[in-house]
Amino acid sequence: MAQGAQWKVIHMAHSEKNAREILSLLEREGFLARAKKVYRTVSSDENYYEIMVLGSEAVEAQQLLIENNLLM
Image (cartoon, rainbow, N blue to C red; front, side, top):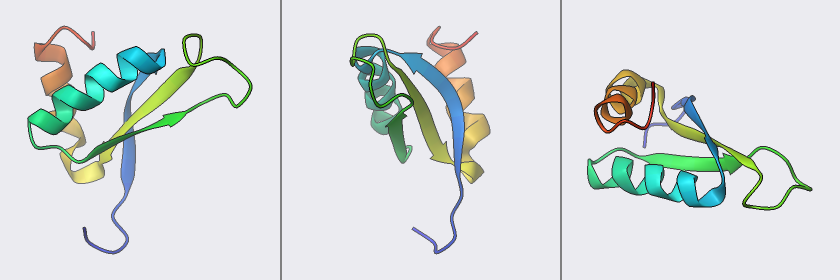
């Protein structure tokens, strides 16, 4: 990965399970993706997760989520 690469939030997933499903889809399609928990003191099932990809791939990653009915 290039030094200084910027991560961009493309979606907010509700629950760790939902975040894992989205990450799995993105990774299967070749995107470098990660999730970050929003709240520290909230359970995994009730928390929100920022789904992030490299800024240069954000539009394509969002399109993939739209095509799979994961992003409206």
